[in-house]
Image (tube, rainbow, N blue to C red; front, side, top):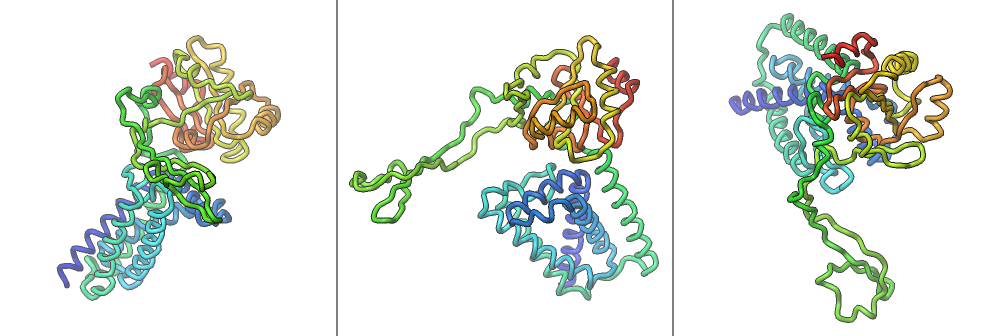
Length: 373
């Protein structure tokens, strides 16, 4: 039991630290996953607190892992770990039966796990944490209490600082398709020989007040005695998905500009504001100055992107006397493009050159440094 407890200690402690660091690297992205769960469980009242809750979870995971490895506050820590893994096991188990949840977000965008894989992972973790819970007497501290507390305090300071840094200045390591150096157009292309989705058609018929579902090969011989209700397509196997498959750009009138965007040569400066009435305020003047600075430059264009409604965008532009107009895009690619609202992305042709968050918007001179390279 002693050896098994020590193995569990190292495995669980290390996994919680790694998992917490990956999520803390992209706190805003993790908050999006929490919002997804809130929507599924009809708990939208938590949505305004999603970022704060994401930060707390990330910090707790890392500190719990550190405390476990150095052997401090073992009784409290094992209780908290047990309660946490029971809760997570319930969530991932529920995800297996709810098609709306594609990924638990356990390891952010670095490691994608299917709901089934996430559930299996949590079941294994539950076993290891139960070993720790019942083998607490074997969790001896590595240092005396004073040094252990100092180590934990340092971990609190570093973890909290890292979490706030990545929230304000974007992830240290970008795991998304819009990372620096990527050609976003190439990532939208589906090869001609790519594997296609395998879809199964299911027909819904009614007879004697009851509804029945039939596959194409299962339609009954006396079909004329049934009343057709509906048809639904069931995904059997997902085919190839381009890394960027939701990049669609429209103007105020609903005209698609995606092809025009990708064909536009030279540098493209993207002003990304998922929701113009949310996010950090007071950035409009600086964005306007940048727009003025590059407006008449050759071989450069400005594209302002938002998922807000046309009426909201018109009012926002008028209120802040913006010299640029917005185009519409779905919120999902905007959130992936830059983890900031507002945020700036600089492209050369269609290659990502640089990103800036709302807390580090560039000056005209800094922008020139990247354009003149």
